[in-house]
Length: 191
Ligand code: 2AM
Image (cartoon, rainbow, N blue to C red):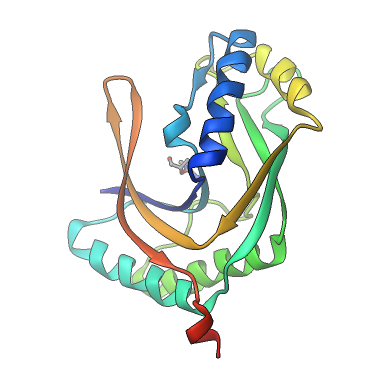
């Protein structure tokens, strides 16, 4: 099963993004845009995990979640991966309680290591991918989109739970299915 651990964006952010994406996508119609209800913030991409290991991964996510308190992020601004004039990926930025977010991400990395899983990215750059270039050489329109998004504040994201997702390729692009979600530390546990 192809898996990753991520945060969901919630209804109000998703609604705000739906409107924004419908406008932005006209500036780069050739790109592959993420469906609004599939947008997420990836904490760890695990890749292929055997079915037998999935419950253990879910439990590990739960143990880490319990140790980290809820925190508030702000979503806005933009960035790109790949050459600036022809990016491969357009993403939305994340600010706010980044220390708490990094702590959560590092906790997951530590807890997953004994299971033989190490996230496929040496450095964690929090972001929410909006669109990817279909062309290997990148997509010029994504630079225009990044410019249009700079300085745009979309609202807050309260991090209250962590989700283990499975992904598969559907007829109309990637589809993500929550396998299990775990709440972060509650007030009771914090005492
Ligand atoms: P992205 O947002 O940077 O594209 C599900 O596929 C999620 O896992 C995506 O959000 C994607 O991050 C991330 N992902 C997919 N393949 C990856 C890889 N090889 N390394 C790191 N992250 C990956």
